[in-house]
Amino acid sequence: MALAGEMQRDTAVRKPEPRKFKQLEMPHLEYTPGLAKEMAPLYEKVSHVIPSIEWPFFAPYIHAINKLKKERGAVLLAHNYQTPEIFHCVSDIRGDSLQLAKEATKVDADVIVQCGVHFMAETSKLLNPEKTVLIPDMRAGCSLAESITGADVRLLRQRYPGVPVVTYVNTSAEVKAESDICCTSSNALKVVESFGTDRVLCIPDEYLAKNIAKQTKVKVIAWKGHCEVHERFTPEELRQYRKDDPNIVIIAHPECPPEVVAEADFAGSTSGMISWVKEHKPARVVMVTECSMSDNVAVENPDVEFVRPCNLCPHMKRISLKNILESLVYMREEVTIDPAIAAPARRAVERMINLGN
Image 1 (spheres, rainbow, N blue to C red):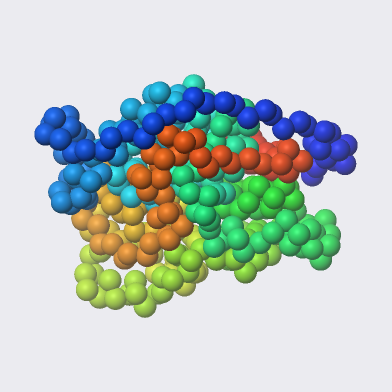
Image 2: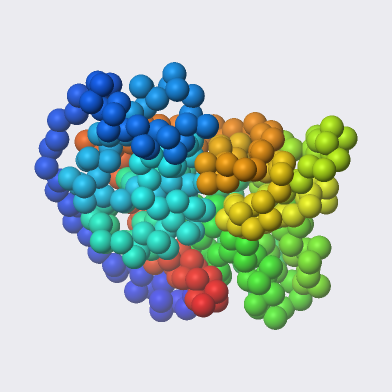
């Protein structure tokens, strides 16, 4: 979709000068009786998902982070897969990766701290180019995002000339820049059918592409990328849950293999799964996705019993209260994107957003 002239103008964009932030000292982290009393209402909210023995360690960090956010003029974004002490106790905006980046454009903040993985921080930077975007651990990657490169997309275009390229938001800015449009797990079908063509490349998640292909007449060409959390679920595992409790409800993420999705009562994005639980209020439910999400949804749905198949994302778990605090104190690690990549990558994301509008 991008015109040659557009690409030439993109390369002329100058990288903005980095902001200078005042130096701060690391605050004292002591769990005093006064702090315990001050933090008690917050702990009450999360007490059934955070053990009491852990709270004296978490509370000083939470108190310090919430204080530093105001001093830095910062907003914290937390993905649904973050642990409850981050998701419910220090974040300002919560949700899936695209929702976080979009909502961040609406806030009056100089600094965005992305409590997620690297591609999410990049997307936040794409949609908030004038803001300083930090990620507490630059090593927080993603098996799915790392399964494909911009060079791979260029080779796919050579192999399938004229076929539109739809790229999942769970990709690097470099890959987005080589794409026609992005998609999420909730809007992938709409995006794939928006071109009015008989074939579409939907990359890099093979299982998302296959699950979408079952819902459309468009031939969906897939890539062999997988999420290391969702690919580990099996249909046998889900059938065992039903054998143990015939009344249990199973909801799955479309990054799971198609045979797993086929066993579920509902399949949807992280935000779709959360909305489904809030609307239907099942007595017992299995959320077939990263297990911290069950903890986070349980806080707001105390009457629902969550059976937790605990597949953790090791990359998400690199983000901790400790490195969030260090990120705010020392203003690290800053996420930057080459302007020549940022402009076409932003365009692919904005096309998706505009399609939704």
